[in-house]
Image (cartoon, rainbow, N blue to C red; front, side):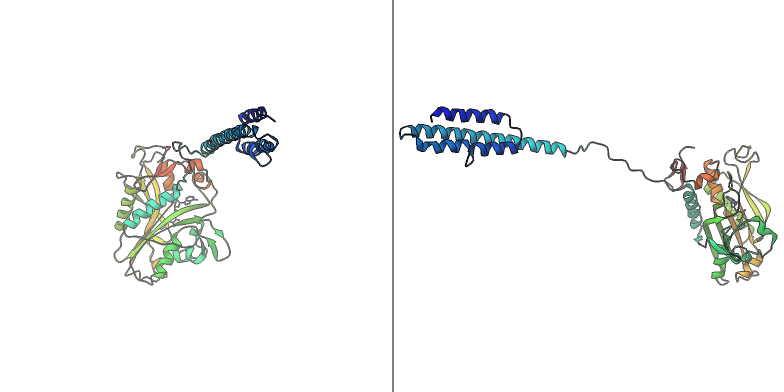
Length: 355
Ligand code: FA5
């Protein structure tokens, strides 16, 4: 063996290393040349077959080749490691300038918003919020409100009966009967009761078999019709605008005497006549009256000492008027395109962005 064999080993290494592209192949190449049974080690083993004179030169050449291979492998290892790190970093790179992922925020339901507006207004006047039961007894829904069985006025509210004595409440008025009863004849009572009610009405653009109502009740000494009128005037201005006026028309409810229907001056045409007010200049918004002495007495109040007023309104219809919604069924069909139009304004009110 002569030094030309060493040159061939070096050359074959140089050629092989030029094609290496990953650390694993480089490691294999290292073993192939520098390992125990590798080519360079094989050259060293040849030393014993050489003469004493040849050995130093041969040994130096093998050492030089081994150093060369070791150095190249070292450099290549570093280069490949840097490349792998670079690839990993760019794979894991986060572009902090990308816009964040959008997640959709729900909008409060327009009915919840109008109910909250109305609640806030009455809380400001010192009212408490009272709650009752959606499944109610015939007694509280009708009898305690001066509507004995077979009273013809029961037909005013077609009902879903569950049994002889139980029904889905047709209005929120049973809450006033229950609340008065719980106060054991002692005033003042000053409540509003928002909630769902149910009637066997056929669904159409302005009627739903399930809708919402807000009841109001004040019972104390010396409560007069003027207190009712003043309260509702303030309410109309708060919900429909400062310039609103109200008017009371005589009406009939078995639980109030006298009873009135309350209209507000039209907020769209300001009284000139338009499609919202059906060209009358006025829009009906609620029923009200002075609490009937029979209702006070049945709930344990002395009607000679106490008097009161009550009112009941439909937030569905109020929201429809306020936002120009033409069909009550939009409230109950859960179409997000409808609900998402309503946003909460800074003062906590509702804004319909499409209007
Ligand atoms: C009542 O329910 C009385 N309890 C209100 C009342 C309370 C009067 C206290 C006096 C004192 P009325 O049946 O008119 O009254 O209903 C009140 C409101 O509920 C109506 O003005 C209307 O806005 C709403 N309403 C009635 N029926 C429906 C329906 N099917 N769909 C949607 N809203 C309705």
